[in-house]
Every structure is written in C-alpha cells, then in structure tokens.
Image (cartoon, rainbow, N blue to C red; front, side, top):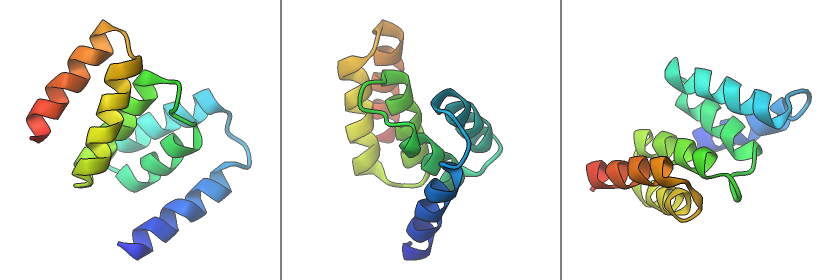
Amino acid sequence: MNRNVLFCLLLVLLSSCGLGRDAAINRANTLFRDGYAQKALALYMRADSTDNALLSFNIANVLMYLGEDEAAEAMFKNAIQKGAKDIQARAYYNLGVSA
C-alpha cells in the first residue's frame, strides 16, 4: 500500500504542472472509467473536494472501489451534506451498497 500512496503523491505533484481544476476532474473521470483508480484519485484530490459535492461523491466512489471503506463513507457523507437532492440520493444508495 505504501507504494501506491507514494505513486499517488508523485502523480499529484506532476499533475499540478498544467491541468486546471475542471480539466483535472474530467481527466480523473476518464481515468477511473478506464480502470486507473489510483491515478484518478490523485487528480480528484488535487481538485479540492471540500466545497464540491459531486467531486466528493466521485472521490468516495474511487475510495470504495479501492477498498478504503471508512474514507469512502466520510466522502459520501460530505456529498450528502453539501449536495443537491440527486447527489444525496446517489450517495445514500452507494453508502447502502457498501455496508
């Protein structure tokens, strides 16, 4: 696991050289869809999810996929707290699936 964390940190540092927030999120969506969860997580984390419910939801999905259930639960709860009804519903659903 330490190797993966180190890889994510390295990717975050390297990715900060040219992508804006929206471009990073779009790229992360593509990476996750294509099976590159670690790379997607690094880009999502770089985009700062504290005020963005959809981004929190996306991070939670990646964390759930990676087996980081406690961290995923916290991000789903953040999405529920800050999100519109559609994000809240999807986050509640995913919380139930991960239980």
